[in-house]
Amino acid sequence: MLKKNGEKTINELSADRKSSRFTTVLMGISNLGLIGLIGYILMNQTVVIMPSEQTAKYTIGNDQANKEYFIDMTRDNVNLLYNVTPINVDENFGTLLKRVAPEHQKDMKTYLDKASEQIKRDQITQVWSTTGLYQYIPGQQAVIANGVTKTYLADKLVTSRAQKIKFEYVMKSGQLFPKNITEVLQNEPK
Image (cartoon, rainbow, N blue to C red; front, side, top):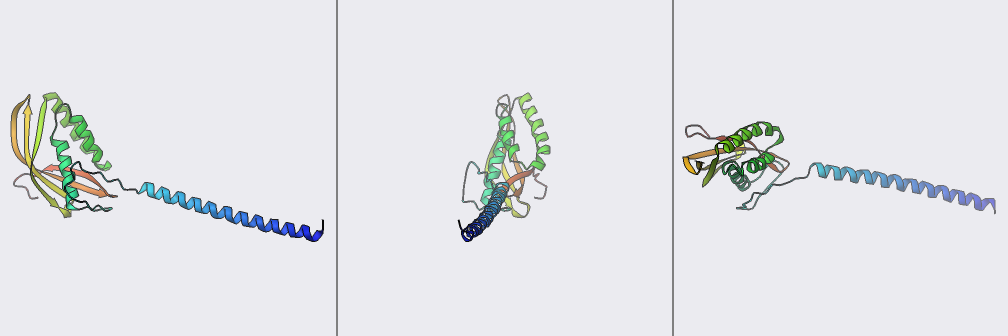
């Protein structure tokens, strides 16, 4: 073998090795970029909880949604909270609690647990009948639901009264979380 051919082969191998290293580094950087992108997408993915009854088209963004979405979610939440029996109270309250923002779950859980105990102990059945009137308050991200609550004790009607229930929400990453649920008294400002 000629020395000239050996040097040529060594130079070709050296260039080939440099090319392989460059390609390997480029592929590694590309893979790290893709892993980072997938991680970002998974951490910031939007999960939209759909109400059981959809009355209109929804427009949902990262931190805002249209009036119809707020009203339909309120309709679902008020049904979970006020249409309860000793048999379904745990399931309804559990479903409602899953919808509450993590930072508000502790307070809500305490309230729902006490209500659940009383409903089971006293065999209370509560029925919510909506009047169909929902007032959306965009500045507060809140909805006031109007309806009639009937409470039965051992199949006997104990109370029937008109109520206004205010649901205040927090919107995060396209998800609507109830943060506060209160009764609006007649003489109280909305």
